[in-house]
Amino acid sequence: MQIQTDLITNRITDKIDEKLKPLMEQNETLKKKVDQLEKKIEYMEKEKKSNNLIIHGLQEREKTTTELIKYVQEKFLTELNISIEAADINKIYRIGKNKKGEKPRPTLLSFVSGWKKMEVLKNKSKSKELQLTEDYSKEILEKRKALIPQLIEERKKGKVAYIKYDKLIVQENENSKDSRKRELSISPSTNPQSKKLQTSTSSGNNRTNAFDLMRARSNSNSSDYVRQRPVNGPEEST
Image (cartoon, rainbow, N blue to C red; front, side, top):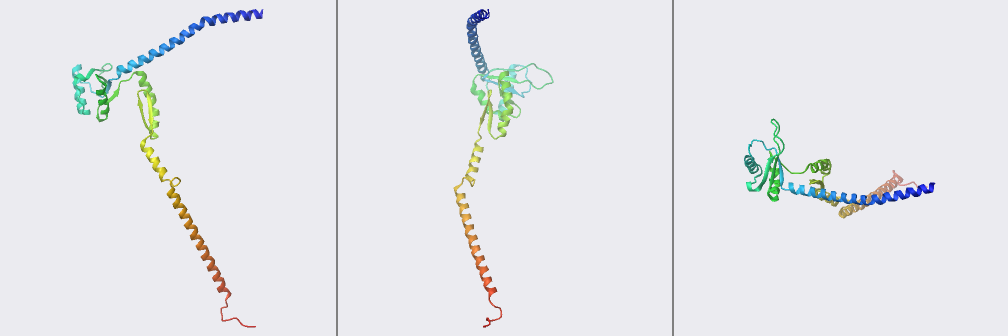
């Protein structure tokens, strides 16, 4: 009975596996397709935002989009010394709902071409009022935020560190490299001239010490000879 039960169980298990195998293969295929679609969506989202800039600190005093464009043009010219034409702008609008009494809403500025955006980013440090950042999705912003502690630690070590999209880039600081090279070249353990100097100094000290020793011995012999001579004239004969 036990043997028959085992045989029946094995047969049932084999049949179930045969039926599940194509389903499992189909599931793996679907997973791969989902991964590919997610990557495509992420790429499209990145391309969509590639020419966008987020402007922080821009006071809300405009009433229309045309006034907002003119206000941005004035600010970029005075703060960054960059001239922007209306034809350079693809779209521009405030992000979020307008709430009175709160700080001004960020402004999304989308350029027609990427080179104008890069020109603005290169000069963003000149501005004292505006803060310019790239337009990232919420997922990328969370990843960048999580990398900030590690970024601070690497910079404390003297390394060049920055966040590029969603990755932390760490490079060796050239100044620290040069200082290490100078320290190694000056160090006595690695400088052959310093080794020669140490050798010559030690040999000179040895010669000086030998000369002092001989002089001390000669002084001691002469003092013994003086003590042996009589003080009051020649010795008496017997």
